[in-house]
Length: 115
Length: 114
Image (tube, rainbow over all chains, first blue to last red; front, side, top):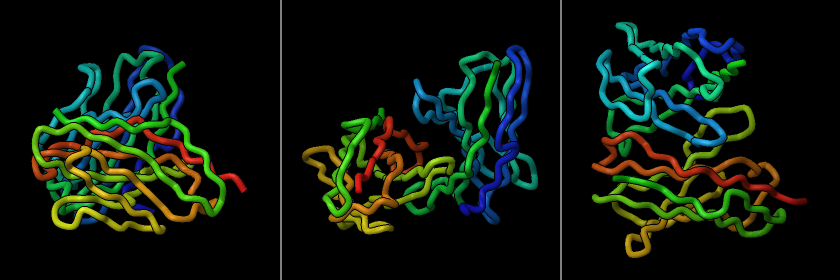
């Protein structure tokens, strides 16, 4: 158990819908990352937050957004869903932004299926 | 820009045989390098990482990796494979002293035959 909690574990929704994925980082971790894992794209970095502020942006679509709340939990919002958005979405956390000194811990992911 | 190439999407070894998973990176500055393992229906777990200093890095479960700057490689090895090593392995890079987000390779699925 990494200590990173993601909900829901599985989600099936229809095209055009909107979903919210939730992540609780490890206790004490200030930095949260979101990754998307799909068969065709592999593991793609989406976005990073540090202590409530956006820190880095990766290959995140405009239909997707995220935020980190004062209690440090994070939500990833996916809207106008398309079939191609079906993937495993990982949340990860670390104490600080330096990946060298601070291990990044991954949650077990949220499986999203768009039908 | 940073990138990672993992040679071989599938590797199959016999139990007790040497495990060698290949990773080559591209980075404009000295990189931090990582190997993660993903067991079925689980998240990624850090196996080992190279930041600075000794180029041979030892990790969990008997794995180790060697950073070779001249070859831009960070191959993962284990002297003797165990059935429980069957999983998907990801190499990742973060340049800029680890301040950039991790860029992952496409992964290598390791099968261990009895």
